[in-house]
Length: 483
Image (cartoon, rainbow, N blue to C red; front, side):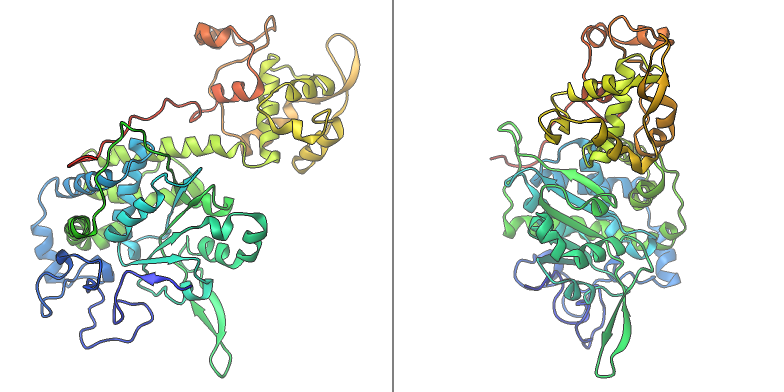
């Protein structure tokens, strides 16, 4: 199947021929589009950030004088309420992130990175498709696709990129066998996260190599997690089924689409005058590395809008990034083993040495850990060494404080790997009952409920890693008539 663009055939379609009126920001007037897109008649086509063009100096100066204090903040508030009218996100931070991501699509030519919006859920009927419905009517130049070929997609991306909306991603990456057949799609989505990462194809009768741009913001929805390389480049929205107490409006094409188009157009009219300012903006980020690359456009939009949005954007960035760090602990055995060994050392009072048999006993005692899947005896010394060899960590004959000599692991050998691959724990010492600790002040700060039971490794790390065990977010109410 091929993708279905949110633009009509003509100048607005990336691969279509130019019509007599080449304004790329023409709004579609076909089925499913509301009157808000058709206002002004054929001689009064709208111009806006949809075509990513720089307005003329006079137009920009005039628009700048028309800015009202708090205008941008109010427009983001309006968009946020519009999203909450039809969708119940998993948290207020997720709702802020969705709002800012939508706004950022209208300034794609200003960004160095194109963040993905990963909309995932454990089962069907969790609101993924409804969120895509809202995105389709509010983002810049939507190009919605279901199981399209990579060649069809990258040929639809131009120097004025659309916003890709990929539904049913589980049919592309749902299993290892299926994902293997779609490595080209994964590579396209990975490359398009950063500017100047074109794909090259041989085309034409002369078989000349031609470079096609891949840079475009993309929302990808599916059941279950997407490939790690895509999730690592995404703002992740983990949708869930609504409770009976969580209400949203019915999404009716006749009323919902004109309403959303009005919200979109008001925001787009404001953003078009801020394009150059957005391109020059270097916001202070609460995270680093790829997470900073991914969230920077969202934080930049918040800084442009002002009001409470700069703080809300950075809070959402910090909270959602930390939460995903916790989810990544179970993403692979080689990372999970580091996390559990750190917790095992902590549960024994962080001794400098830990015997291999004691470490294995602690790891296999955790009923929530995956080590039982390694056989009837669980994780063995040999299998543990295989998991750790990539980090150049090995067991050796050690002399313990009681004078005995056994094979074991030194805590110092793990320090570098923990710092590089595991989230830094909070300064709380978790110890076995009766074990000596060198940090009594930290132990005294623990609540009585935390100190009483001996934690399993997974419980220990959940208490020590920011972003895990967060209280459930308050439900986000919709607006308007309820069902």
